[in-house]
Amino acid sequence: MIMFNKIFTYLVMAMMMCVPLLLSAAEFQPVGLRALGMGGSNVASTNDTDAAYWNPAAFGYLGTYGYQHDIDVNAKLRGADAGVGIGVSIHQQLPDLIDSIDQLNFNAISTAAANNTAFAAAQIADSLVLLKQLDGLNTPGTGVQFQVNGGTGFRIGNVGFGYRVYGEIGASALVDLNNLAVSTPAGAGAVVNPLIAAYAPAATPTVGYNAQYFSPAQLTSLSTSLQGINAAGITPMTAVQADAVVQQADTALAQAPQAAGQQNAIASTLVTLAQSQSGNTIDQNLSVLRFRGAVITEIPVSYGYAINEHLSVGGSLKYLSARVYASDVGIFNQNSSNLNTSIQNAYQDKSAFGLDLGAIYRIPQYQFGLVAKNLNTPKFSVPVVGATTAQLYTVKMNPQVRAGVAWLPKDNIVVEAGLDLTDNESTALPGYKTRYVNFGGEWKPWQVLNLRAGVYKNLSESDIGMMYTLGLGVNLWAVSWDMAAAMSSKKANFKGSSAPRSVKFATSFSTRF
Image 1 (cartoon, helix red, strand yellow):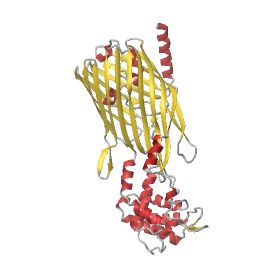
Image 2 (image 1 turned 90 degrees about the vertical axis):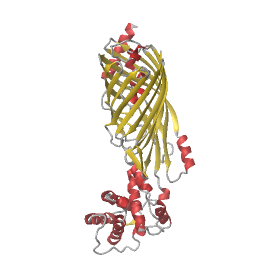
Image 3 (image 1 turned 135 degrees about the vertical axis):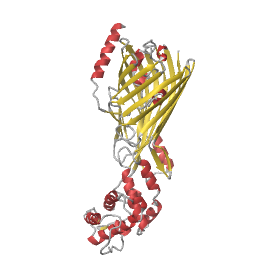
């Protein structure tokens, strides 16, 4: 046994020193009630079966007596727990984009386009704002993210076993800006850009026109750009036609409050719309809703070895079973029932193994933790269901490295700070980065009550703001019930109402004996 412990110690320390920092990895979720209540800080002070996730080195101290101010639960030889947590987050400018699109009269635009009739001023403005907002949906990381975690675990002394489920599913959009023709060109061969028939069928610009929305320089630049569009199957606009289109758009936008302050973006949108008229009409648009993510079942076997009262090392060998979701669903060719079926059936099950290593160093009143997860980079690849061309979606669990420091001034108080040392990326929303800094604490005013609070922030993105957390634990002899919740400081607005951009909730039962 002594020889095994030495080999295990050298192996852990050698592999952790070889872990490169600042990689790209999957998001580090705040798994567990205690961790969520403390703002996602748990690497240095984890003290239950969640150590299999946060830092397996803690198993080296669980079941042993330590310093005067170590949390008394460490003296328990055995333990078990079961819990579940859920969360939802709305990322980037999605709420503002949806709210803006909801205020537009899409039916009027669609009817005019279907009937090949000229657009009224309001429809001209709405069509340009609509396209500008749709283009915003293509921004990387824009979408809705759903998270879930839960499971059960138990330990005997320095060995832990578990069954954990955690995952994230994201919904985002990929908008086709090439097939947005406002009418169908009549006949074969070279035809007039359909945008002229929709915006300025008379094609008679006003001499000496005074700019109302765009600047005079923008009007001139836009007219030149429209004349230079050389789309296949469409005759380039003449100077008269381009001036007429630009003037009509300028007049309409000046009367549209939803277009205020967006001159540069909408100027670019007008050129894009003119280019798209060589494509198909909107009923043949290839825009899709993208569903990506994975729900991973993790079965770890963890072991921790306390080299001495100061240093412990540990590791978790994990069997991973992943249900991977990857689906592209056409926006313009689905009804609600087909959409639901497409999402539910678009998954495949894959499996792999993972390896985590951790270390904890402690001195009276202080503990320092470091954990490296998924050192062997497990990955799961599946074809994207519904993609117009063959695509593979890969959930790649790159190594995650996280550090934490805990201060234990008394036997009923813990204060901890944590930091992601890797730059992580959401598996559910491609392009959305995460790197969290966490701070939180736990206070046990009485034997039967634990109070927790914390805060964490994503250093890589600013859309969510600060996440504030609260947690409560009730201890009745050997059984505990815990709950925790988190809420973002930034809010999403829709139809005059607001709600937090991100919320999370979790609850669990545990026992130690």
